Image (tube, rainbow, N blue to C red; front, side, top):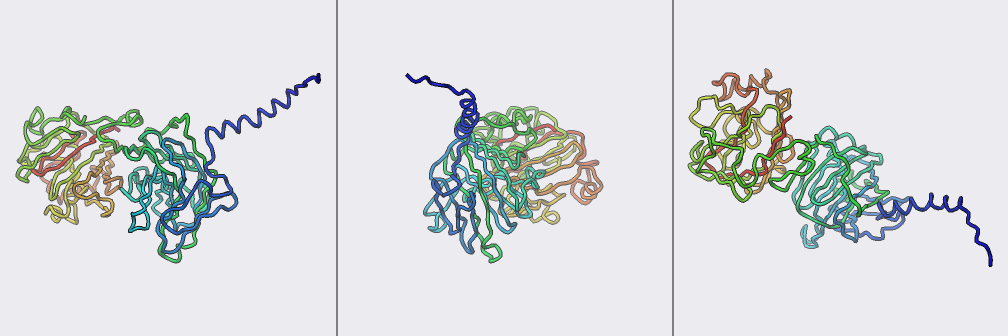
Length: 457
C-alpha cells in the first residue's frame, strides 16, 4: 500500500488563495461576468449597451427615450456596489433598484419605474440622490445634503454603494454617505443601468461605464451612517432608527393632540380640529383666521431646530406653519410669528397680494418669496413635505419637497429692512425672540397635516 504524503505548505497556500475568494463570492457575488450581458436585457429606449474591456458601456442615441439594461432576476434586500464613470456633463445616468416595467406605459413604448440612484454630472450635481423614475419624481434631491455635491467626479471612475434593507435605501459615493430614504413601496424588483434620453445631436454618442458590479443578498447589515444627514421618511408619523439616534422627536403621534394646545387656550380645541387616522385635520369653517377651532401651538418652546412636516391642501385653501410664536403680541386674528406659507397658489387670492410673490406657497409670509419650480410642487390633494431649519447662528432655510426655496438671517439688517416694509412693522423686534412655540394655522379652510417632527440643534 502506497503511503500518502501530506504537504502541509501546499494545503496552507491553497487555503490562503481559495478560501478568501470563495467567501468573497458568497458575500458579494458578481452579477456581471465581465464578458457578456448574460442575465441582463434591455428595456424601453434604443440606446446601445455593449461589453468592452470588462465593462458595460452604454451609449446615448439621438431621440431615444430613457433606456435601461436590467437584470433578469428580481432582488429584495441587498447591498449593491459597482464602479461607474460618465464621460460627459451633457448626459445623465442612474442605477435602478427594486424597479418594474409597464409595457403599455409611455404611449406603448414601455415604462420603467422605481427608485433610482441618480448619476448627475450637470452643474446641479445631484449624484447619489434618490429619484423615483417614471412615477413620483425626486424623493431625495441633494439640496437636502448640499455639502456632498462635489463627491462624484465626472470623467473618472466612482465607487458607488446602495443599501436596500427593509424599507430603507441609503447611498454612498467614494465612501461618502449621501442620501437616506424610508419608503414603503417596492419590496422587490429588478436592478437596472440607465442611459438617459437625449434630444440634441451634441448629446448623442456619449458613454457611461459600469464595472465590478457585485451584490450581497445574505447576512445584510446597515453600515454606519452619519447622524446629521436628513432622512426622507415616507412612512408617516414614524421615526427610523437613524432618526431616533439623531435626536428627532415626533410632534404628532397620529392619534391624539398630545403636545399641542390652542393658541388662546390651555387645552386643545374641542371643535374645528380632528386628530385621527394619522392626520391633524383642520375642518373647514368661514375661510377666515380663527373662524373655526383656532390656531394650535406646541406646548414646548424652540430656538434652534430642524422642523419637518407634511401637508395636504384642498382647492383654494390657506394655512401656515409658524415659528418663534411668543403669544405676546396683541392681535384679533391668528397668532403672530414667522410663517412658512401653506397655500393653493392658483386659487387663493392671497398668492397675488404682498410683494413679488412673498405670500405664495413655502414663502416667508409677507417677507421673502419662495423660489420654486412647478415640477417640485405636488398638486392639490397630494402630500407635500415642508421643512424649516433654524441654525444656532439664526440662519434660516425653507425647503419644499427637498428643494431649498429660500434662506435668510434672522435679525440681520436685510431682515430688518424687509420687516420695516411689511405688515409686521407694528410689532417691535418681530421674529427675533430667543425662542417660541411652533404653530399650525386655522385659516378657516380644510387642510391636513401629518408626520410632524422636530430636532433641536
